Image 1 (cartoon, rainbow, N blue to C red):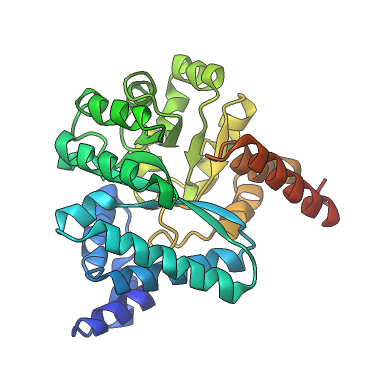
Image 2: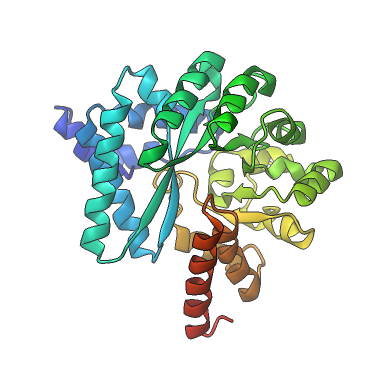
Length: 325
């Protein structure tokens, strides 16, 4: 949600916010500041129409970046906390994406990840897993968990993840962002996570590196987010870590599966294209590595194999046309 959209939604609910004030509040430097910002900003998502407006704006933005497929995470745990009707919200969200895709004139395909909030507890996570299973036919492809990874142990959520697996949902978890490498191991071995959100702490543990490689479990790397939540500074034991110090290049050099993502694009001021540009210009990746990183997004997507092959073929054709292969 961009600052401008937040101002728009606030006005819809009868509150006037100054754009400059909102923009200043978006300049987070710690994870705690981000959580407070997220809680405040999303408090203006009160009706299905608000979610539809946000979804349409998001889909428009990523279509303009030539994105043809996305797996979007919905914080269903927050919707439930606010006693909102998840089914109505989800219908409105899908309609918003459809409008944006039609307006863009290109077939943006979106699948959905229903996300629980770790600090809300195991029973609330189970509620999210049940809703994800109920709405599989509407494009929900996975169950995940974000929030404060240091709040509760992974074992508390085993039942929710086992339930999701039993319903043929993919599973992922944020781990090794603010927590240590053991959090990544727990997400894989206790929860059965197939992808890890962030996971940058893995770089500190050779055994966890080997686990990721052996099981082909990708890390969803979000460099700008890691800078702006203080996660990178915590990892490096530095006061103000710079994006040039991010371990993305080290992960690639060691053969760890990785993809590049934005986390929350508006809150972290991190467009997808900008992330790829920074990977090459400030994080030391070659053009070939950046192309492979983009292709990895399809390889590790929660898609059927035939869909992956088609999308990768399209991607390679376009990359070749641009002289990148």
